[in-house]
Amino acid sequence: MQTSDSDTKQEGKLIIFSAPSGSGKSTIVQALLKKGFNLEFSISATSRAPRGEEKNGVEYYFLSPDEFRDKIAKGDFLEWEEVYENNYYGTLKSEVNRICSVGNNIVFDVDVVGGVNIKKMYGDKALSIFVQPPSIEELRKRLVNRGTDSAEKIEMRIAKAEEELAYAAEFDKVIVNDNLEQALESTEKALLNFLGK
Image (cartoon, rainbow, N blue to C red; front, side, top):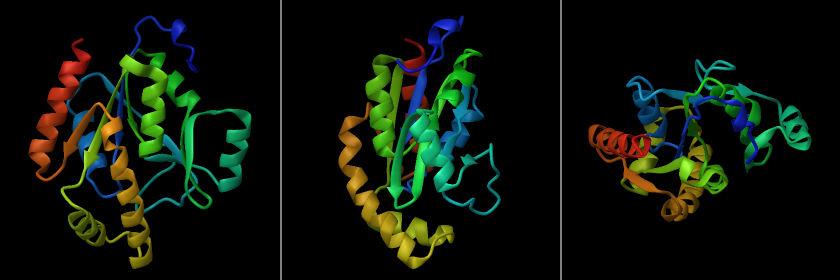
């Protein structure tokens, strides 16, 4: 294990959310954070530019590609991936240690490879949830309606999503987000069951 969990009085559990971009994962995570469960969000690091109103240290820790590579070299990441060329995402060990030190349950919003890797590292201490769109066509529609990406970027995301869907079977629970209310309800049930163990 790569964190100093032995220093904590009460160890939090890990809840990992992964999904293709546009599946509604962030909406589900934000709703759960407001419902208690003693959850604290693990802020990921990324080398991509902020979108819209995003702020450093709130949605992400924004690093330049060089800063990100420097932290990789120093071993500062629990997991990381170069999703597109010079576009990195990762989980800083310092973030996990910060949340563990206060005994909260940690919520990860990470790409599918990161989700699979964290689950392998923590085993039964982690619950991995894959949020799946009802279809690729619905996903395309959501990405277009979101209005944050160019047509070229949307096609890149769709191609990536098709690859990512192949990982769904490696997660503890797959939530199909066809209806947000039902998806939230299913996720809450899975969470209550996991945290009650």
